Image (cartoon, rainbow, N blue to C red):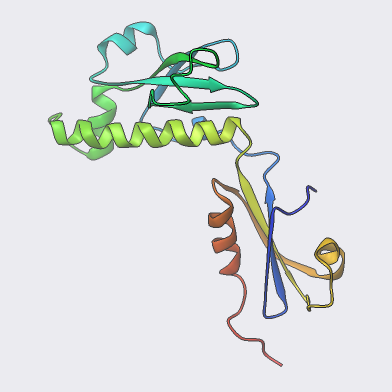
Length: 185
């Protein structure tokens, strides 16, 4: 197990947040968008070039590669750096997928705008995934202030755990939900 990146103690409990070493790819989820990325370090094709050309909603995906890989739908710095970035491909939403997602019969400008926001979020989450920026928590009971952080796992009793959070704070907040508000005697 990796070392915890954050530990919060409350009411003789400790919530420890760790990197998730085996997260599920968010591209396995039920996504609106389809990725078409064709660069050496990020190759993911979920559609064809013809799909990209026909898509009513299409966003360029930029890659910045320097001590890790970041993806973005924005071309602002550092994604416009001439040395470490490039256009990696596209994320698209097909007409039929947008209509199904929103239960609509007509593709309106408002629906397209909503689809754009979803696609941006999908790229951001996929970028976190490929960089290992995914976390989980473990909740331990029986932890008093005399127990050092590096002994919590051995000293406490694991009460719960969950993985697959895309921020340390989200993992911590969820873990704290398992800590009782007061200690019962």
